[in-house]
Length: 205
Image (cartoon, rainbow, N blue to C red):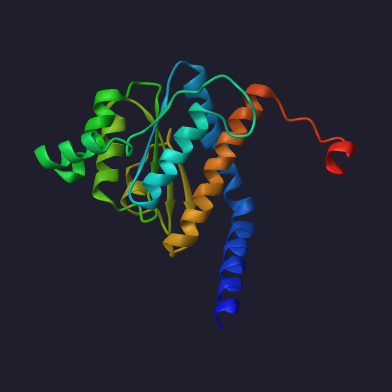
């Protein structure tokens, strides 16, 4: 019984990714171009989310500042969910809805990108962060699910939304992780060129 349930989890996740491969590819490409334009123009990516999405934002920033798969110069990114002192201080002194918006207004500039991850698109602090990004003339790349929620209604024509067509947060997050990997890989491909194909000796040592 449990084995079948485990297998079904893998199948459901793979099926959703397969469905999204064609439908989301154009918007993921647009997200890559927005991020690339920012970091090559002297800008940076500010990433944020709640719960598991916060962890995904930190994972993205680590891959961007360090590396994804290939050696390259450092790229500017910051996870707004990483500093517990800042988050708790803002929540205590102001309002939990402001924990990202105040950071965006403090750190964001025109030409930067806000990478906003929200499975529902309805989190009040994420909505406030997008509004703050627009105040700073930043581009927003929103990774959402279902129908995009309130975030989708706030986005401008210059923003990008990658909306996973699913209701279950776990499935949405799995696709979000893949999209983040695609963004890292796409930026690297634009900066470094496509990686060389492995030689037969490398494939069969």
